[in-house]
Length: 314
Image 1 (cartoon, rainbow, N blue to C red):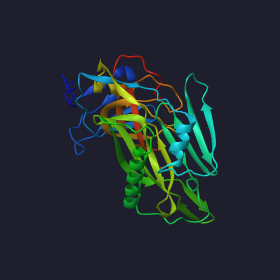
Image 2 (image 1 turned 120 degrees about the horizontal axis):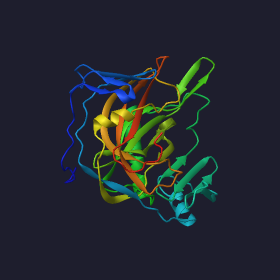
Image 3 (image 1 turned 45 degrees about the vertical axis):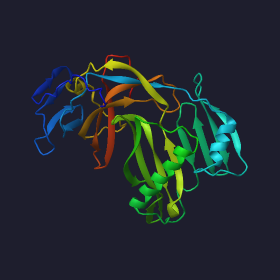
Image 4 (image 1 turned 180 degrees about the vertical axis):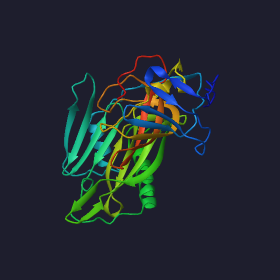
């Protein structure tokens, strides 16, 4: 971690009983091939299918810096590459009933571009919400390449784009929304998803996706990134073992099983319409949730890593 790795908190591979939370961990595997660790909370069985991480003694807080923008700047960005909104524009300021939190919206027919004061961006065009017939989609590999080219143009556009040591990392291509008409159904677009990382630590809610529709056209784009700058160091006061006691479910419907496939130190950011002064360190538990009907969904669940005051994380 570029000189920030100080004394580490060792991962303990042993039997742990967290009686106050009703958890019982059978064992701690050193690799996914070993016996899985299992504990229950309510109706959900948690399977720990990874090792506990070693973490640094301290990490920096990330300060959220406001970006000054105006309508003319938003119009100029919307009219250039890669958004190309050059027709008759409807421009307005948006307010979210929070002090000093706002955005500028630019609309052209079915196209919408929103620039937020702390850095996030949204772009929507026709086609992302569905077609009346199956679209001709590119391959997943081609969709990834198109998304990479689009993000490069966003970086050159005048929008805020994260700078090193922040890094935009594409991590998956998945099917977007689908449409069903009579006995036929199809995928409307590919969703090329990416995350924002600081020195290889994930920043939750700061990533986004590029939606690739018919003919390789970008029909939507979202970026939750903020203008983050280096803040003071803060001590990691919660061990990975202790963080397990805060593990829960982010879903409204209770999963029957949650398989934890990775645990890492990262940061938490609020939804883009909410003001935030600092991104705080969290443990990120990620994996797959399985429901009674057999459906599976990925998850990334945050647990505080310090003794600072945290907003509600879920």
